[in-house]
Length: 168
Image (tube, rainbow, N blue to C red; front, side):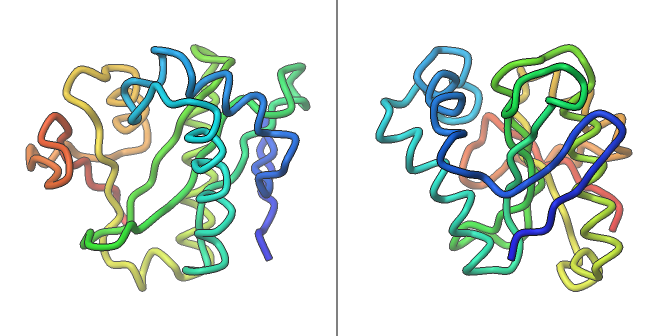
């Protein structure tokens, strides 16, 4: 079961079928280049289903970020944790489809980190990182607000990214 998290302005909830249009609208544009896009609609579908499937395989994953409490869209992005095969560390990530510049990424990621600490996941994982492209100053600001430190280590899967480490 995927838990629901609530903040003052956001609800982090299980991804659902109705999120696909927002996901595809983002991933099929150049805006998604920083997170592996642009993709076609099938590629966006795979992102969405991966977000759901990760919960079932590992017991954690990505939430859909719902900003309807704040007058925003029912799905403004996604945020959460993943550990792709072959990687040593659990990664905290965030992608905003819409609503940028409103602090949603920081608010969602902070709620996710709090959940990981509260449930004991963070202690079991040992290290939580974010892989952030050297040119992605917006995500670097989010990571800084979360208290993460840029280790300067290149991410093995993408040397354009450095590893930012979060306190567990």
